[in-house]
Image (cartoon, rainbow, N blue to C red; front, top):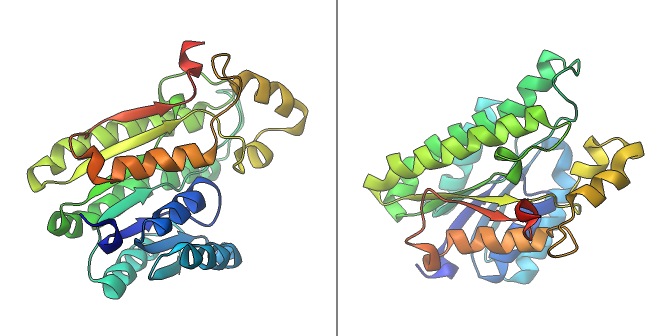
Length: 255
C-alpha cells in the first residue's frame, strides 16, 4: 500500500521509541494517531509538531491511560472517527519494574506492568481487528530480548515480555485468515529511553550499562534503530513475515 495513504496508531508515542517511530512514519507521509498519558500532553504536542514538520498530513493526539478500558475504547473510536480507517497498530507502550523474586512488590505495581504491557496490547489488538481486516493491515508489538534471556532484577518485566511473545504468535495465526500480519521487535537495552533513569537505581546504573552493551558491536541499540525495524515490519517489504519476533541487540545474545 502507498505509505502516504496509511493510518498508523502508535501507543506510548510521547517519548522514547514510540516518539521516534511516529517521526519516522511521518517522513513516509503517513497519517498518525499518537497517544500518551494525560500528564504527557506537552510531550505529545511536541511530537505532533515534529511529525507535521516531517511530512505527516494529519496527526491526531489522544491522551489515554491504557490501564483503563474506556480510554482504550476512546483511543480507537477517535482514530476511526478522524481517519475512517486503520492500517497499522504499533503496540509500543510499556513499563518496567526493577527487582528479583524476593522483592516486596505491591499488587498494584505488579498489576500495572501486566495491565500496560500485556492486557492493553491484547485489548487494542482486539479493537483494531475489524479495521485492519478491511485494509489488510498489520500489528507490530514491542517485545524485548528479556522474553527469553535472563536479565537480573527484571523478573516481572521479563514475564510480561514472555507473554507478548505468545500473544504475537497467536495473533499472527488467528488473524492470518483475514490477511492481517503480526510481528514483534525485540530490542536489547536501549539506554536513550527513560527505563534506565526511572527504574534502575543510580548506584548500579554504570554496571548495568556495561553489562547491557554487546562485545560484538561495542554499544547498545539505539531507539532510531528499533524504530527502523518497527517501520520495516509494518511495511509492504515485510509481507511474507508474520508471527516473528525479530531480535535487534547487536549480537548481545551471542556474546
